[in-house]
Length: 116
Image (cartoon, rainbow, N blue to C red; front, side, top):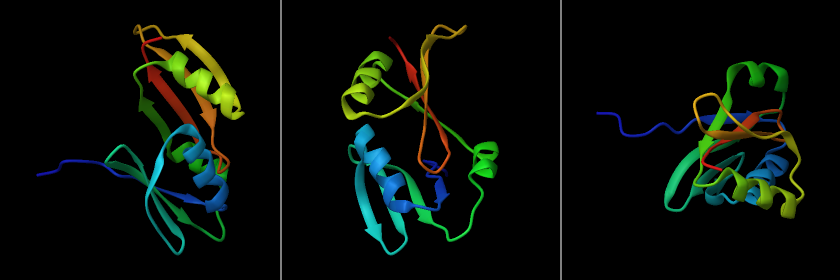
């Protein structure tokens, strides 16, 4: 019955938030007034919705994005090349995966997890 989850993140600055994810390697699948759908390959993963008033701290409590990747080291090198700030550098987790954490312009914590 259900075949995917596509969360929509409320953001104050949709242009800055969109640019953050595009710099990470996502593509824009659809864009209209106040909305952007972001994709990896052919799959739409999530959307961004412009809000006039919001509380980024409340967003942090509500949503923590975690993306599975083929290589956390590759993402770390990509972030360095693109000048994307890393909040928490890659670190081996107790369950055997590597993880690093970024912060989007809207205040969302964005983790990438996978092999080194």
